[in-house]
Length: 456
Image 1 (tube, helix red, strand yellow):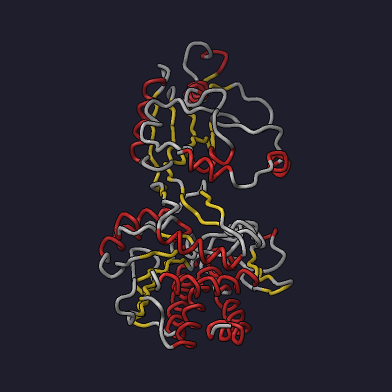
Image 2 (tube, one colour; image 1 turned 45 degrees about the vertical axis):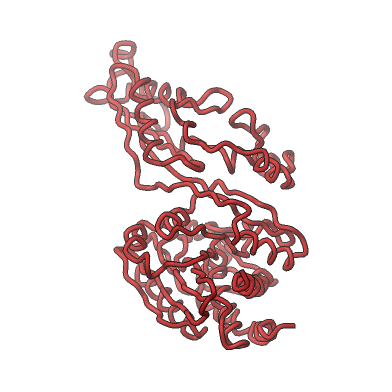
């Protein structure tokens, strides 16, 4: 047993107590009334980094919630590793579905239950504990370290682009390791290769000066709801293929190796449908479910509204209709270009007699793709194989993580996702929890990874 393993074992109870204190802070970044709590969480992180033995600790202001920086730069000739995580959390609604107060954590059956326990406070505390163990047991770290812990990830990190651009030298590094993510299962590790981009839009259709009598004006004046339905239906074929002109022009096609790696991941279609309570699956022809979800772009209608929606009948011809849509994007697609393509498509197909406006919304992200043979992934593969006793899957995600492309574009370094929560831990939902077994395993994993990167 290594010295750091002994240190981790001897201090595990203290680490759990500290994590409980951390998740007690209601650092909900999306609610203005919790701004002081996000600040408090940042202060907690800064103090804990100092306890761990890191140096040059700063709580750095942004135009929104703060960023916490720390470093340890005493390993000459060794690479510099930037560790990323976030200390803000999601809102707790609906509160009545929680078994207890979401910020009064409890440890039961090997789990800590609280908002943020897994996403991302438990996960981001892991590398802090690991660095402490290395420093206390061997007196030094095997690599140079920089830390970037932020307080606005759950709202899309809106103020980080100018912040990172203005601090490129401060955050310059050789590797980036993100503590925000998950493993495939308790017994099966994985390495994330990609996240999708995001382009969000609203379509507004305006008809006559106001609502009209459907008997008097029906058949004579355009109905915005019909116009909107036609516009939306024109964007996809009946079998799910996106029909917006130019939508696929920049898509990087899946290679044979990509498809082989995805096909190696176990998939039970019948169980998948049963879990979702659907009778059939749907999507772009020619691709498997994982390929469509992870590696092909999508266009989804998120909401439609307009006209009379109360009880009974109101024979009205409404004067406006609205829809919100989002597109999840893959490598080489850009959210602004996709928004322009959709706007051009809508203008082309919109019926006469209505005015149509397409507005790109603030929520957007660029897609991210990392090669499976990247040196960071190779190091992670070796560590995870030793830690779990089996090779990791190479997976992708249909979700969007804007910070990855932001870091890549500004620092020129691909972020590695190295986190130990699991997706069944009710992230963003009531009764979020974090397995203490994952907490302990992650500490070992980070000690091993930093040692492995120090040998690179």
